[in-house]
Length: 416
Image (cartoon, rainbow, N blue to C red; front, side, top):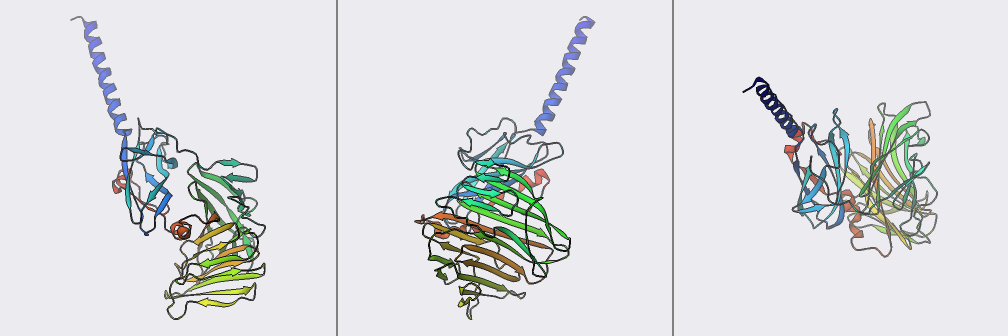
């Protein structure tokens, strides 16, 4: 065989070997993969088209973009919204958020399969959901309008009639001297973390300026699912020198002509009415360091409330939720982790429409955190609305296959 032919054959064989090696390497780095997600209803409440939020760790280099993902239940594709919460140094996805909706019976468990990698793509779009319209000083999310400074926070809620009135609106901290400071305002940074259509997350960050020049970092997060008419608002304020004593959330409500009916989720389902603009009702829950707790409800003209109902000798734990209802609008509300640590917890409603939710820790703390849900519902109340506060406080539990954490080298993180 001529030397030229031998050389050509050797060169071709070498090129084939190189190509085979490259293919093998690429196949190892980018392979179609799947991970099992177990979703469980653990509270004993039927959930209809309930929002589910999962955060899945992904090995480095395994997923370049969110267009290579789909969610399956058996052989059926499930409409899902996916986004990269963070990325590895090489640009590949590190944490993947997966938002979708599903219906569950009490204590039911469902299994889903998340597929990702080369050759994977969702066959359909998530469908119609929440639309975002961003303006200079506000953002419209579905029917809810938010300010971009967090103070005020919620500008409009028009599910039927307008449910937001003028008044104190957003998160407030109170320092040790009793001076109140708004969380937000000029200089606040606004970001869209998840832009829908199935789930929207907005983030505000900045610093609270105290009177003595001290500035405390804060983050306010607002979340809305497309399947429920609720708004979840969370504030975290860092206080390393423990200058603050209270964190509160305020919402001015417009509920039409009086009387307005209210109730709190006590073991007796405490209820009453606000008959005029001067009326007021306050639920206070005292949690002592030893773990004992006692609640009381005071009602009457604002500033002159008198005992209405108390825990009595049994001293049961009270749930931090309730409703206030006008002629055409109902607002269900819930405070996450109500009474979970020692301190004083207060929920106040008045006939002018001001709703306030407040946490005062019993001892100074380096971090203040408060999460409040508000569910805006029109009358007549739809079936299942009576359970909305407990269902908001007890989301469905998502468990990611532990092998996925091992493969990615990541550990479960609170909030993911």
